[in-house]
Length: 596
Image 1: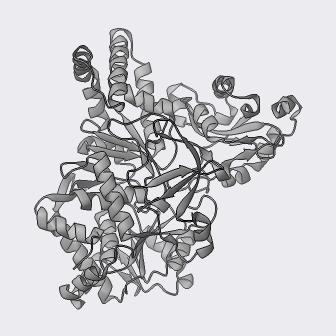
Image 2: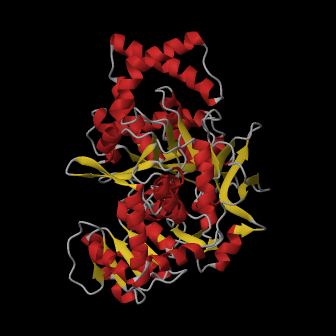
Image 3: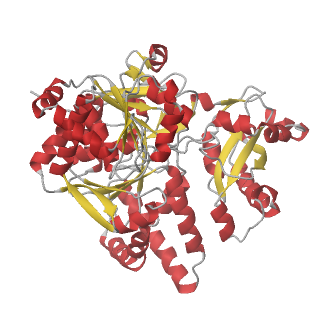
């Protein structure tokens, strides 16, 4: 008898709701649905094709490209055939692609288009184990013996019977390897996080229960599918609950697709919510007279209502009447314009988000539930929940797991969501898994009500020349609350005082009618200095930022300063802008007091 796995759940959804839509894609300007029955057929065919091409249990396949149904089909099909799919960020360089494909020993890779194929072709001499490259639907033809079109690949299914396919399904074990999630490499080469079938199904069940997701829900798939969080929202969650997924046309089309789809569930990394915040705040600042007063009143009402609801309470009738009026007059129109008119669950994860940003959205009747976790525990460790949310925290721990704080403040996790280890890296595994606990590398603390607060990251701790240990996270978050700030990196390791490297949001500058180069604008420096002075008021002297530089451009993935999930690579920033940073410390006599 087959064990509970994500592939089996997909096949069961096809039995339970064969004609219901499993996913939608936009073709010829129209969103067109594919049923659960057809989705399951696609997965069976892809799995049989892989088996015909020689894929053996415990082997890997790689996937390179933007979110598409073929991405998900290939992923689940590989698991069904007993393999372990490994997603690769579409923004990875040819060298990074080669590293992952070779490291996971994939004989087969799915690529989105000719542009992604060229990355493989450029490194093919260093990919001796790669036997086949499959192109997604609609990709231009490639005349190369290594390459198969999607249709040619699916045609290979005829070489393997359904009976052989079901034997592979029935051989899957809950504790067996299901997928590889390659880390984004903030501190070195990517590591392959090994997740089991039980890791995936258990976490999907818990996420369903916490978010109250059902088959009536919808979500937009647009963040990288090589990240476990997006896989939960696009692959594992929907196969568990039966909800439909809309695949965004492209990352550039997301704002328009959101307005068309109006999903019930919206997951975004902090930068997505920060951009929303920046745009909405600018428009609200432009309102005048009666409209401005109306919006201020509505926001006050929504703040009061959502403070109650986050604490598990409901407003009394007089406040509820005001709230319903505020919704009709202000919030319904605003949410419709954002594409969030149906949103009942907005989630932020993968990096820290400022409390002020969350408070801003709560005042617009949009509660954003912050989740914390990592690939090594299948996505979530803690989650703010319906009726149990505290802004600024990352919520209570998941039910069914143990989370404790180590003697040095590190967050330690034990439970069914903790990974098997790092693929082919026993030493790194031994460092991360000690006595059954995942050592997260993050620093945190619980409040008296069980809400977890992240206070920093062990490897990010700055030790000043005076021997003071400082976590830069909260300082950076406070500075980022200024509208024009895109990113901040606080510098200070082995230094006499703290400084900051700042990038500026060009859209915000345009709204403020600032057209100078950001690093040459006196007005930009004035705005930033004012914000830093405000932040410094609440900090101990040793934590205060004494100097800062404004960069001429924003951090980028291409320059290696950001991971594909938009996390900052501190080492790359400090190396790439070393000359500018050193210039801040060339004359530090004025900052000697920072040692005290």
